[in-house]
Amino acid sequence: MKVEEFDMEALVNDPHCVDEFSEKMGMMFTHIGDGEATLKMTLKPWQVNPLGSVHGGVLFSLADVAAGTAATSKGVKVTTLDSNISFLAPAFYERSKTLTAYAKVVKGGKTVFVLDVEIKDEESRLIAKAAYTFFVMSR
Image (cartoon, rainbow, N blue to C red; front, side):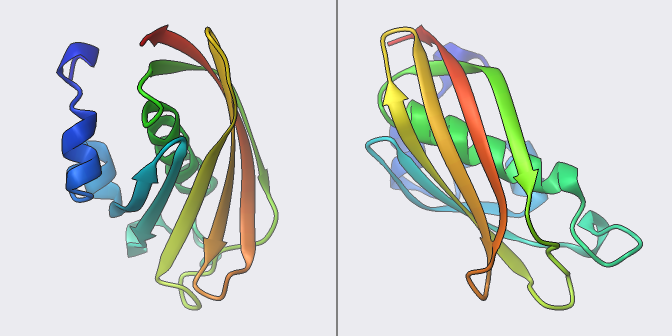
């Protein structure tokens, strides 16, 4: 999808309107608005490592989609400059079938946006925290 084709209004009005990658990952938005996004992901057995916990790349993808959408909800088109994730607890598939990412704009400048993301399991345990810096491509 080209940046010019991105339809934020459609995403806000229909949380099922996600890109193909997000859909295959099992992601669905439960809230989008004014620099915030909440993204729920239904876990799938193929997203789990041999120890039974969700792969770090799956957690990173969840945080990335939530952060990018939260930034975009401020009316800007962005691309990632920097990102960092801290894995704080394992997300065991046998314990939780869904994870939720909560993303929020911390600073929305003219050329750079900074966001924080928290990922929690069904028991509200903090699984990971991420920080994102985005470059504003257009408004």
